[in-house]
Length: 74
Ligand SMILES: [Zn+2]
Image (cartoon, rainbow, N blue to C red; front, top):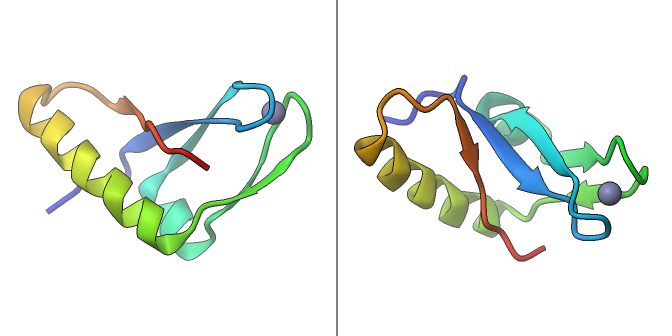
């Protein structure tokens, strides 16, 4: 089971600034605002699920990692 307090770093599709957010927050509200360019980013549930699978694999390898870079094509 994936720890919902793990943070994901999601690249802004406009300026590539990484936006960090916890999984718990993304599950409740998958909309992010980029702090650099103010773009509103909505992550589709399906992409979020794909991302989670990646995260689970990453966590299995790197147990101490607390921020995971999510490679999503938004
Ligand atoms: Zn941005």
